[in-house]
Image 1 (cartoon, rainbow over the protein chains, first blue to last red):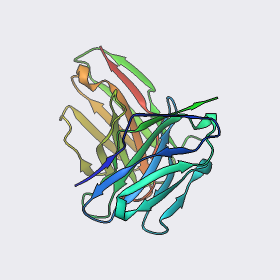
Image 2: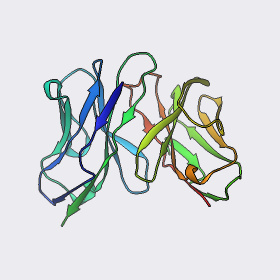
Image 3: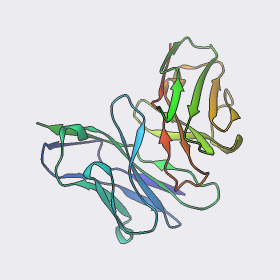
Image 4: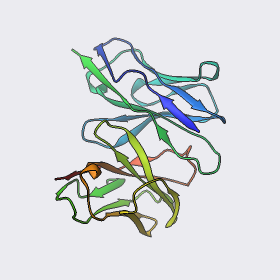
Length: 114
Length: 114
């Protein structure tokens, strides 16, 4: 079984501040990990993914995430928040085994204050 | 050019009615998915098709029936709609049926059952 935990439901930062969105996973086999972003009234869009290559993954819009096996974490960061980053962020996990599927966390809302 | 499109965007209907949602992708992908996002924004997979064949069928009431006439289309028919079916339904596609592949999401269909 696999699962993702995103602690908290809402993070608020000031424009220009560091963004840190936490994701911890549980998987009995080596995982593949994803961060998706959902802007208001839109579908999900991939920010970045870890597929067992480099543990530090760079994505779109200045976001990056680091896979830490010892901590079972895949936290998302961005050095300087912009107003346009306000959205819902979902961490997701899957694996290559039979019957694998993408399992999402409950999401976290990022607000950016001017 | 919209990569993954869904119709309708909004659907308001009465309990007990039957309704369909259509999805089309122009990415040339082999695999398509239906997800349900509830009022708390939790996303869960419902079905997945690969080259018109059903490969994932989660625990979903049999009032929900997907149909894939060709690999570019995946429709969702819902019989005898219930209040609890109110949600946002997302269609997605990926190049192949390997879950580490990026999934591309449609804009969603917001279903409200009264």
